[in-house]
Image (spheres, rainbow, N blue to C red):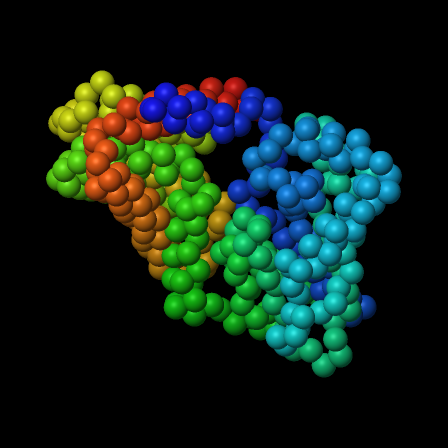
Length: 369
């Protein structure tokens, strides 16, 4: 049985082909002198049009779209435009605006070094600011990764940036006059959600590492010891890196995180009991994962005046995401044993599958440009 589980897992592994990596959705909203506005959203339009995951092979997606008959391709684009109008919102004083949607890069060659995209990577929303409007907000559905929103108003040379959690709406931005700062409650809530979603569903590598910890032993003490060591370590490096005390290139951190997944999973197979050396290594791996979290938080950015609050909320969100993964694993194993299965039976196939995925990521991240 465990061989069948392992083969099923291996069948889900991504191919060696590359996919567009959209961990964030960059959005630029500009308010113009003539009373119009534009919103440029950078996203994987080919994947959205075909209903494919963002990890799908970008070349294959582009080839599929370009291979359609002209009428079928236009029908696909028309459905995509309707989809984008449903999943994106620009609201003035709380009322959605009926913007126009266009694919800015469709039919144009992408810059050298960019993976192919039949429909391009930028969708533009355009419209006119309603008369008498006072403020604007932007919304993207959960179909998009977390949004990094920049809003530039008339007369400004640089816009202000804001992070939105998946399915979140921006704070109201006044069309004129001073901008109001986000409240402490709003900041904590937003970065708490961003921390959770960085684990579930966007942080599969961290999820597999935590699952590797949960698979070691049926006893609670070994699990708590590992989780505590991991939490203390990644909290330390997340904080130090966020304040610029410790830095390490993602080119080094990300392959090592993949290796940490391989190590924990393999040790579950060869030595299924907690040893002091494992705790030390879990602590070291936690330091690496903390640098990985810090890299993501660096992309998200910390709001001025709320840096510490946002950092703490993000870290708590990460912990909640990890605890959810551990709780899910414990429940599944408990149900398995209640149904008469041996607790040890799924450990070997699951650990081997996790190790295989970690090894794949290690090679992929090592050779990535």
